[in-house]
Length: 302
Image (cartoon, rainbow, N blue to C red; front, side, top):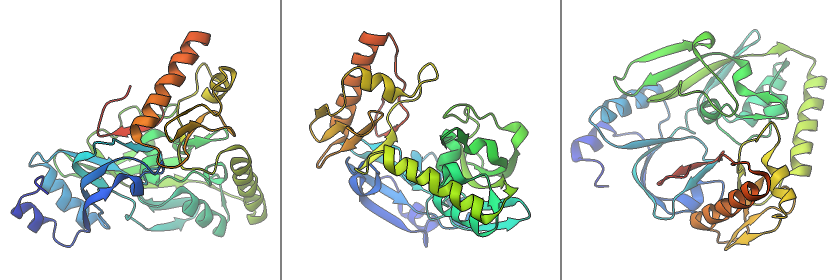
């Protein structure tokens, strides 16, 4: 709690705050150390006060649903702003307006209810909208960036709020090209298309079934590494004979080599050591350097 002074706490009064948050409870990997202080804003008014705090130089990090976030075993000793409680979604014609904390599965269900297609392939990704935009999340050939009309952000350097039109955004493969650096995503509008609910439901079910049948059910951070030379990293990892290889409680999934799963008691260091082992083997065999897709909070991993 040394991060925040008495006056800081007064400024944040009414905003949910958790100290010594378990990283194992927060991260989808279910491992890692504690976070000293976590803020859970629930409104734009909360965000405005947080921006005022950050302008004082308080060190911080932004986290969505932590679905691809590994928490360092030594913990995170800066203010963590977790945006998953920023909620709200509405439809206006073929546009869906949603707060950054809305999950992609919830948005896909909302789109189905309103007869709007375009979200089906993304319906199984367990990310918040804000986190998905930051990394341009995608699945089965679709990416969230392809659907974006505009994004409303809070500039954390000066506390101003403004909307970034799609022409100002530069999405790339698993990247938003630094468009959101020093910014907190507040909300976004997605341009979908009218479609028969039966077609949408069938497409969603197909995507969810494919994910369920090909990806592990154990705790993981999703794909460990990005595609390399247009091919999923799991192909190289599988060809390197690494399925089922483990370090401590972290294991290359026998179901899909692109995932590192927690088999029970896996630590962040287990995950990183196994990731290093994978990269070394793939480089030795294929001369390809795999690039991590996960985010490592509390340390450096490149």
